[in-house]
Amino acid sequence: MDTAVVRPRLRIIIVNYRLADMVADCLRSLEPEVGDDVEVVVVDNDSPDDSFATLSRLIPENGWDRFATLVASPKNGGFAYGNNVGIRPVLGTAQAPEYYMLLNPDTTVRPGALATMLEFMDAHPGVGIVGPRIESPNGVPQSASFRFPSLPSELLRGLQLGIVSELLKDYAVVRPQDDEAHQTDWVSGAAMIIRAEVVDTIGLMDDGYFLYYEETDYCLQAHRSGFSVWHLPSARVVHAAGSSTGVAGADESMKKQRRLPRYWNESRHRYFRKNYGPLVAAAADLLYGSSFASWRLRTRLMGKRDLAPPFVVRDLLRFRMEEAGLLKPPSR
Image (cartoon, rainbow, N blue to C red; front, side):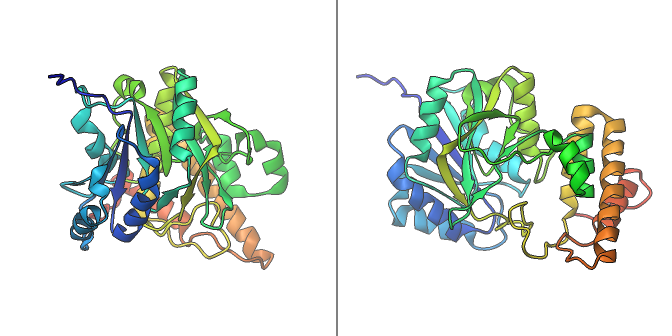
């Protein structure tokens, strides 16, 4: 009898935190897209509600246990931590897939999206990571192809002044929308496929990030190891941005945004310090803080609507003082 283990083609990891109903919608969209060579792992990131019990019931009730497994994370360690919980058990084993996919719980995949991305990866063996077009439920595209953050981009992000934005447009983190497949610096962690060789080469995601910047950092490490990152608009995934965190993305700017959580500054600082050193991290804070303060003052003097989060500069200053040991950081 042949007892050889068939290597899965794709392992999809969905990290849930209090979004059981959205996870159900995501699994429902995956059902017609997955075959016997695709497995889905739903990691409940220690949700404080009844998410685990709800999903424990919904998955077998709807027949999704044909392709999906639910596991409980021992703690809510954040996005990277939760994805690592779903990846780590198969690393170095016969069950390791050809590809991993990170998929947010507040997403649904459009028909053919998985097949399109996998065909692209098969045809381009030098590509390490690919991300699809990310769109709102009404079909409007969201930003999903980006340049790496830099000192000029921090100035741009804070100042928001037309002439400066034009002069430094090639440093803007958000790239212009493009309907053609193109190489990019990084793609949205809401939906990305990672070649297994990337994980074997650079390891798991850095779970020192609680939330935000972890996919940016991971794509940077992939680039540094010789893998390219591509954006593939012909594959489409719907994303209800900010459902879990309440933090609006760049495409949700028509309403007043909530105060940024502390982990936003933690992750941003970690990215710059880890990859470029403490001096660049300090310069990034100075550029962004001062330019944002200038923008907010200019906005108020001109009587324009200010939809940016409140206390941005105050929270950045407090974070830096906590990092310096001048203030005690809050317990998470």
